[in-house]
Image (cartoon, rainbow, N blue to C red; front, top):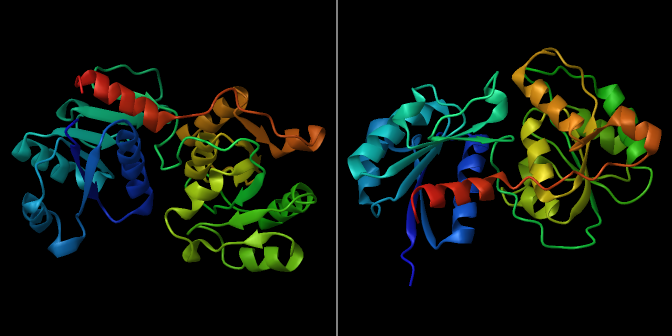
Length: 297
């Protein structure tokens, strides 16, 4: 019987970072038996007490962390327990200090190669491999103002009126969704079923995406764009104004558009159809294969 891998996931309390760590842990568990233990750096008074509290857990094979606040603890715990360190997203410390760095391509201005670095398309997430055939779900994912995008609700509402003219659509927002927008959608587009993000569980979106055939995402929400692409759905981009046209995030989106992973609303208006992506992005599973290969597990 294969011995389970012990995984420690370090958390800084930010849902987006936690989602990435859990995405990799889920993918590892699909390949090997795993025991997952979560260590919060917010509890028990901060980093040092949390490090000490973690000593009661089974010895880790891998310690996984996302977010700059976790890097020091990740290195300290990995050295103390002779575990392999896996950092997600580009770290604030030298890359060579970590055993594996899993970093989105848009974090680098130019092509980058290093033995301990795995380059991905977007951040990892918890969306499982698609299983259902003939998926008919239709979803809308709304973000909000960000470092790279501003906000103009009227074009979004007009686009939604066109897109949702046929079929049954479900919509959820995010912490950045502007106040009043959801109420405006309820008033002007009563046919859309609304699921406020505050009332959904962490597993809700991955489960809904698994049954979705079409997904529209506001361009600002890059994490939700990659979640939708991971689900295997056809994905459209809802228009929001760009405030940093030369940012790495927008360059990444433009590459996805050029490679036919995404359909812009302007292109959809011409054809009234979403393009099928050339293939399904399974980045967490690809990283898992590489990790198991590199460590001969």
